[in-house]
Amino acid sequence: MASKAKVFIVKHDYQADHRVYFVDHDYQQKNQQIISPGDLVDHDYQADVKVFIVNHDYQASIKILRKNFPK
Image (cartoon, rainbow, N blue to C red; front, side, top):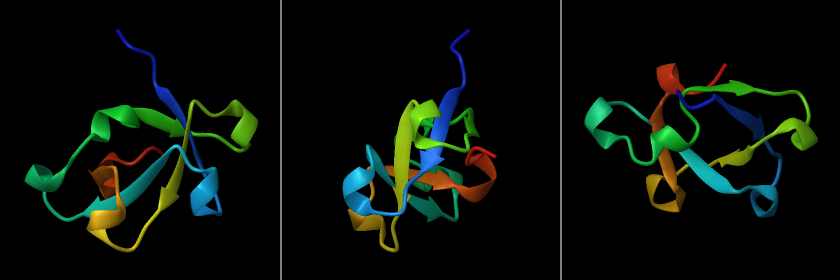
């Protein structure tokens, strides 16, 4: 079994490995397996993946449902 991804939300776009956009339906998800299942961590040095939340779907490399986003 693969281990859970450790995810950190960065404050600036240039710090991120991936950009994330939240979608409303399952079929809209794309590349969600990169961060889900996963856990949010408190510090960037603990993270396997650093993400930045974007406002538009065309900016995102990962599209995921809010319920599937790491907690």
